[in-house]
Length: 473
Ligand SMILES: [Zn+2]
Image 1 (cartoon, rainbow, N blue to C red):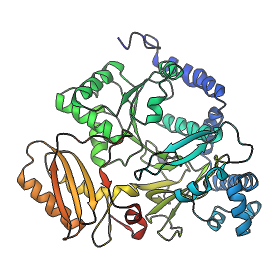
Image 2: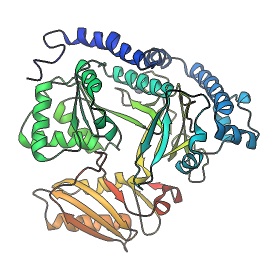
Image 3: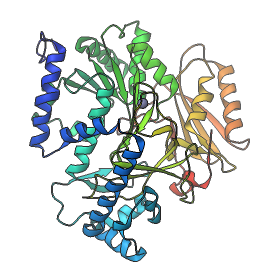
Image 4: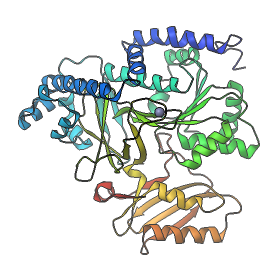
């Protein structure tokens, strides 16, 4: 039924996609006052520039950005005056290091003083955050245009485009609330279908799999855990999804684990393209078909810093700090994302000049704290759990420094031996005075944003900050 009423049905897919990508979506963006078409065209040229030309552009853009911020944003105008910082004198990206980092506490304290005088058309956002402490901020049309344009470019890296049939497994409340008529019309025209990651019961998973088979999307867009669950559900039911012509699965918003990538690739017969960004920090990096996680460097400066805020070099793990130069309406300079990453100085085989983020180790929240103060990454727990057969899904919950619960959804051959091994291995990772409690549960729900969390920490925020120590591999 779906296909019968779908625009483009019976027409060539590429002709309809060209209409969407070349006409309908650009008009939509124009009506919203966005310049994303121009941004995408600019980025598609700039990614091939020689590195030194790109570097010169970035310095110039940073200088213009900081001059505008210093002139129009009360919080930073006062800060620049206090530090005797003259943005007109910026001649290299490292000049940025003369400014302090901006964390969520600074954003909360500054409030409306982060808004540029005379800024118009801003949208207000609030991110939940695990602590229940919301971060309230605004996004202007320039940043929105940048992020749409950059995502659009990255989409096209994979041989698909806006207008190709797309299926989303997503659940952010912002997307769900926006199911008004305009949005529905737009989704229909652009051949986008949303399945809610809020509702992943077994019965709904059957429906999801049937919907995917009926819609035959060219691309998927999803949380990795949610899509991996769809993939393993289809496999358990013996339903093929690799004959539908899915060309790529875009995933974002959570750490992507190798087992998830493998499960998705196997089920859909397509590569997985990882994206990295957040509503507060912007669309920051995206994977290319050669496997390089490219920083959207034309307009974004990524720094890696240690616990003391010192800038680290390529190859060193630290917190990802972002300056997004399309945010002059409501800027965060050197914004601490809370994510851990490693920059690489290697070139990608694809030939694009955009620098690479070699690893993104997820939110600070994706870490556990051992009794001796070591930080243990979610990846380490993933590795540990995957050594034991029969674990379908898991979640590690740190209740106290010395009490960690492993919630498991299991199937045969999982048994006592597996449980004992998990306790032994987790104790080895987290310290001998840690109590490991195993809970076998029928299912593990996604959190209220529809995201799946492998690691949940109930430690106080001050205790679980990764900055106390370096993450352990
Ligand atoms: Zn590449």
